[in-house]
Length: 111
Image (cartoon, rainbow, N blue to C red; front, side, top):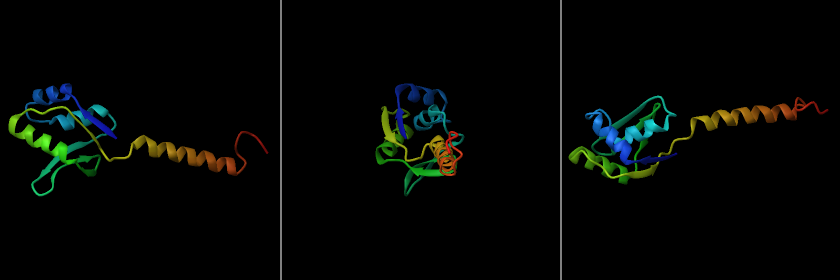
């Protein structure tokens, strides 16, 4: 899933008075996850917890977050968030059930 942190996300994060980072604002803007938490750990850098799944952020994003922590500003950045689309899996299940119905002769009324 592609995430783009824009100037709008950076401005919104500044207005949050330290509660959110631009990365969190950008992922929230995708509007397909219920819970989003940015986790910082010194040996492995930053990771993002999205709906219970922990994903390590790319090094370029970690560097941008370090600059954010020090300077309170960040340049726009884009990255791939390696999380499967939650709607894709439910569509796959629906198609599998439809295909099974055709195999059993319950399709479009054909005998």
